[in-house]
Image (cartoon, rainbow, N blue to C red):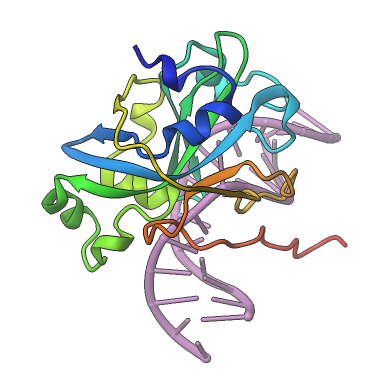
Amino acid sequence: MLDWAEGDPLEVAPRLLGAVLTHGGVSVRLTEVEAYAGPRDPGSHAYRGRTSRNEVMFGPPGHLYVYFVYGMHHCANLVTGPEGDPGAVLLRAGEVVDGVDIARSRRPGSTDRDLARGPARLCRVLDIDLGDNGVRPELAPGEPVVQISRGPRVGLRRAAELPWRFWATDEPTVSTYRPAAARRTGR
DNA sequence: AAGAGGATTTGCT
DNA sequence: GCAAATCCTCTTA
């Protein structure tokens, strides 16, 4: 099961587009993802080796790697690499296809289009937090995405040039591209 | 033991 | 367009 979601994150990422992730009573059809290739990828949390935070990425595929950022947001990855090889795919955005009422209640004031448009919003709508780190999510293949675009990953300061972000072309639920924030101090 | 920084979002100027 | 919000985790000493 989930063979199509296991292996090299660069190959799995485009295959995840269109797949449906269900958690907390809400289902999201993935429209935007990013690949993180573990130890050979300077942008990966696993680049500097195993720590208590990224431990799940070193485990078997099919589990969620959830992390906490900016003091208030959660982001979720699907671990894809074989045990010992920490590859993962960041779930950046999607379209809510089931449980819309619950999703709306978790993000009051949001338009339906924006409900899961961004990695932290997606987690919010699916009720994913650190407590879900390491769980096996409910994931099903969906309608295949017809046209796929790819480009640089979002928000990274390291290895930002690698075109490892994949999204469904012309999908309104894809997040808007923002280059990494510039350093305030330093040079 | 302490400090810096972050795979973001939101609201205000 | 820019900065605040806010705390976990890693790095360095």
